[in-house]
Image 1 (cartoon, rainbow, N blue to C red):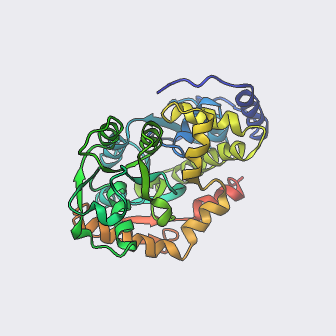
Image 2: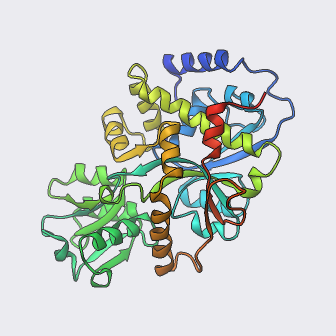
Length: 361
């Protein structure tokens, strides 16, 4: 992974435009509330690394970019692998984390959190890959299907099995690290006839073996796997907590504006690709096709206020209970703090709405 993204002409221009739009950066060392976000390499989460590299925000503690100046807070970015990010959040060592709607359930019973920003959904980024010997889903019976258990991979597998009218008990999902499972299939290991992995492992494996194909993927379960930013309820209640959530949201949408601009799209995709597994432009076009960004406030609000979300979360919670991912079902809530004061996980659209309105004068 490259830790430094070279600033393109677009990046410099964007930073300058942001400085002008947001009335410039005053003394960034003034005393303001400081909050941290733990993030890992994933397409829509790498956006925060790009926002830092292009000057939309400054991810160093004590230094501020224009969006931070606008909202009057300091954002510290903490980059790590996904599992360490979850551990950091669970231990209270960061204020917010980039996490899926499934993975937030376990830490939330000890540290209630609020989903303030859905960032993307898997739409083909999670897939069951099979060799030529597997002609149909029934051919998987009696064989091991390798993937990371108690994760979105197993969830994707089980949900697709159910939608195909099959019984989960007839299939053997075998725990294996996705990178190791993908490598074994790429190398032609006879045991790995079926794996369930996510990008970039899906793309890499399909690229290295012409006899491997997608049996099914997450396109069959749209919006069920939601990537997001969750802020701890206790952090939101601190001075500046609301502004912190709003600044993260605005930074995310600023990069998405560049993605939507034909003049800036390629450079933006390359910048995200440098943060996400060093993928190039052509590969990143495929990545963002299979990981659909909720790139505008309207798209984010549609997720958080939609009638499907409670049904989806009931399905996710049921899966997590059945697979011992959570000991007990967390309390879920929808709307602002007044509507769901006791929720372990709250899905709250009000912060996106506040960003659309702008900070109070």
